[in-house]
Image (tube, rainbow, N blue to C red):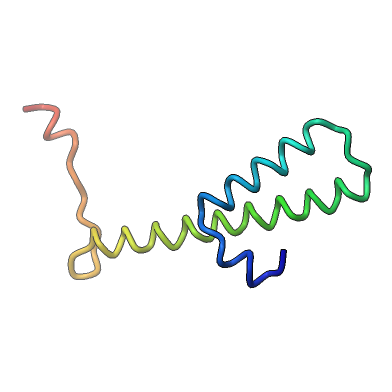
Length: 81
């Protein structure tokens, strides 16, 4: 799969593909050269998922911020009441 196509994968599709790669590698029936290639593919998928999660995390931080500052929720106060 080309780098451009990989970037177009949704998070869910990337996770599914990563799970498939891991499952095949765990079976242990893969020749060494293919296993190395699959491992690299898995690492790339893992990085893609991490990058997508980082983007979402930043978007959530922007939603939760006011004047550039995160609003801190005081759970201790809520629990004391």
